[in-house]
Image 1: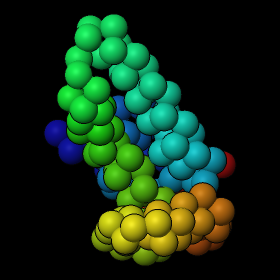
Image 2: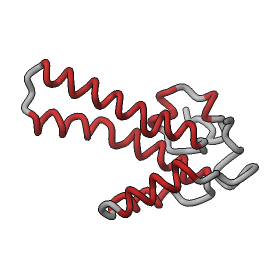
Image 3: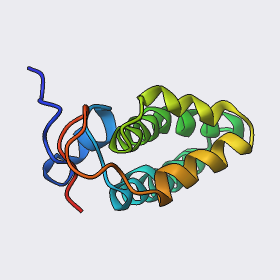
Amino acid sequence: MTLPATTAAADAPPWRLLLDPRGRIARTGFWIWGVAVPLGAGLMLRTLLDIARFQETTANDIVNLLLVWPTVAVSIKRWHDRDESGWWVLVALVPVVGWAYMLFVNGLLRGTPGPNRYGPPPLH
């Protein structure tokens, strides 16, 4: 069963917000689901792996592996809100400048008003 891309981000369950790159998400949702939740989950996972006595590099690799897709999926939705292709996520591969640009565009600039090719506007 596939879910429609038109479901508003505020109405979507958390697993869909974090795993499905379709649709749009507002700036507030980006800061919550694309920044705060991964940071909190990463801190919690890292703490649990430290308690389980995993090596530092192994623990970091596990946390990064588990959090990379949810972060990318939320960022793609944010690019969609700006009526841009999700492939713009790849700008993050440019050291320092790419991350700064992505954070500026996704976190501070408004999305397109009204519906666009990626769906209706997200609820704020």
